[in-house]
Length: 68
Image (cartoon, rainbow, N blue to C red; front, side, top):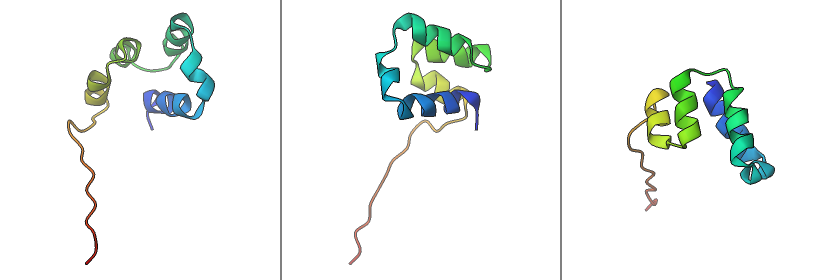
């Protein structure tokens, strides 16, 4: 798993992460061992660019087919 994804996962698990100041968030992202473009996308909070950098899908759907 990439360090960027691990970072996002840890943010999701940690409720206090939602209360980080912009400075704390930027400092945390700067300390990550990831390539510059990924850091930039995280700092800009640009999920589209980050997804492309990590090889994510452009579009994803979830469908539920009810059994007969």
